[in-house]
Amino acid sequence: MIDTDTRSGRRVSTRVLVVAGIVVALLIAGVASFYASGDPDGLTKVADEKGIAAAEKDHRAADGPLAGYETTGVDDARLSGGLAGVAGSLVVLVVAGGLVLLVRRRRTADVG
Amino acid sequence: MHVPDGFLDAPTSLATGVVAAAGVAVALRYARRELDDRTAPLAGLVATFVFATQMINFPVGPGTSGHLLGGALAAVLVGPATALLCMSVVFLVQCLLFADGGITALGTNIVLMGIVTVVVGWAVFRATQAVLPRKVSSVAPAAALAALLSVPVAALVFVGLYAVGGAVEIPLGGLTTAMLGVHTLIGLGEAAITFLAVGSIVAVRPDLVHGARRVLAERTLELKEVAR
Image (tube, rainbow over all chains, first blue to last red; front, side):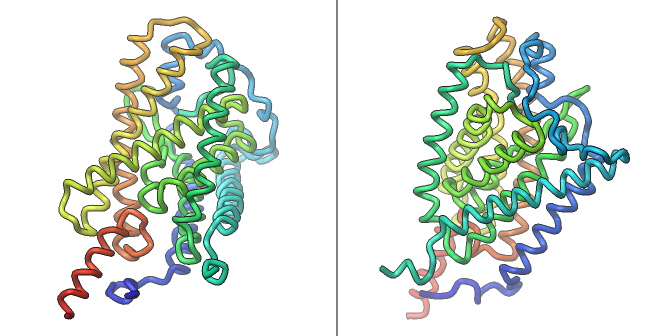
């Protein structure tokens, strides 16, 4: 089989690509998220206008330390949201990364 | 589009929970075909990127915002089965840690923003790829179109679920129009983000992109023919 990687002139290693991507994700969640719109999203807005919103029930995890993308005990809004975003990104990375590593075909195990 | 607790009745939420569980089970089985030692790290990155980018609500009209769903983006980058696994992890973490999306609505949210956007996104992507020139440069535009359409379709499926088990009886025509209108605008943002993200990875490592595999395989075959 031909190694398709070698034909790309701008070859970036998988490690560099993934680490750079994770840094970008952490900057989005930890820094850029502060500047996101605070307005209700499409569904929330429509639910408000159409009278569905009254049916919403309290979330049972609403008292959690990161609920609502804010960190309990951190007063500064920028820091509180940024910490929550970084923590969430890392949890997703570990859980999803671990899951796909378990599910993937391993080079050695694949032969049999 | 995270559905909170209480919008849909218990039987409907239970039904979407069963569909979500079945979808994840199927995805676990087929993701093995998509994932190997080379592509698994990209899948971890995709899940993290979708979580982070969903925190960025962009304005779509007066007093209204929207954010990326990410199913089409993930499906093109890592394959539809792996994409559903990534999306499901994101919704699970958002629900349990961030109280974003109801606990009883977790199945509903996996169905709407996971299964629907992944399946519609992948189907539109493959159909568009068949029409566009068979080049690596067609991957990002096809992904963008897939992303654009996946959002209003998810909004329509929400209306369908609401018609079956909505908590408050309201005229469905008005709900459909409102949901379609705002989510078509959100779809434009979804398309832009998907175009940039898929385009960036295709530019540096097309060989890692699931949606570019067929094109690259054909090119490799052609090169072999020429070499002969």
